[in-house]
Length: 102
Image 1 (cartoon, helix red, strand yellow):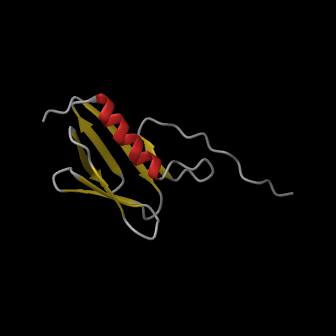
Image 2 (tube, rainbow, N blue to C red):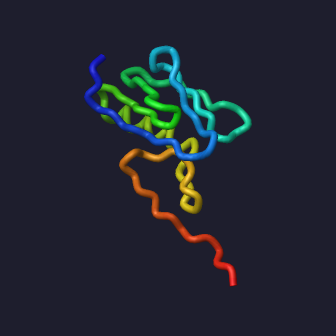
């Protein structure tokens, strides 16, 4: 399969990790929950992990690639206060201030 479309996701957070198995058919995420999140990758999409915190979703159908990348991102969306979570590589998160102390 030749990948024409791809979407790169970045995982930010202490202890957050990702790994792909079964030649890009299974994605395992450690995101601070009590258990590891396991995702089955749909056909026409492959998943590669360049590092523990960089995920690449590639495939020949742009809609399926973007839909699966959105599914992965929705598991732990980026937090506006701490900046932790799963975000697209080209996405910027506008950070909010916390409570002001007097």
